[in-house]
Image (cartoon, rainbow, N blue to C red; front, side):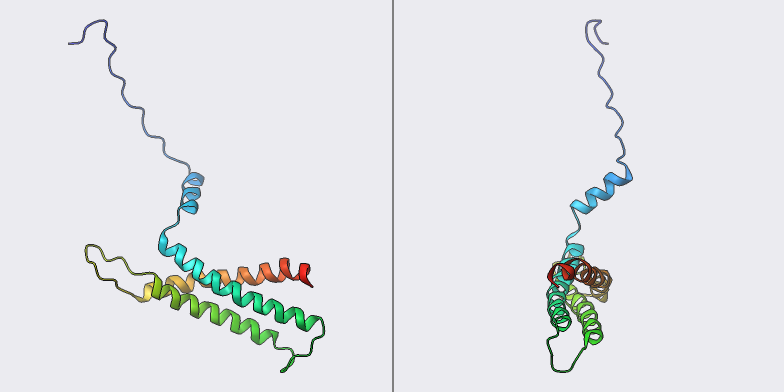
Length: 139
């Protein structure tokens, strides 16, 4: 029994469930390492190739005569193919499949698929940023 002078213990308040926006914001700030590696590998390749394409595009618009003529369509096609293939390959090599209790590292086609699905929108976004934002500043 409790004495009349003692205060009864308080029950803990129920946990408040975070909103959907708070959950997504936390996921954005703390991405899983495999996702971050897949995105960064594709972003690095796309940025380097995109800058090369931007230089080529600006040279052609300024009237510089290059061997082969105007091959911008081929350059964009090769850009997308190289970004997708290298994004898949690098992600396959860098992102191991979870092993559970084992210590061996395993690779699977799922790692390559993760790289593929990460590289397609990144290739598009790099082309949009470089074509719509950087090109008007430099041309």
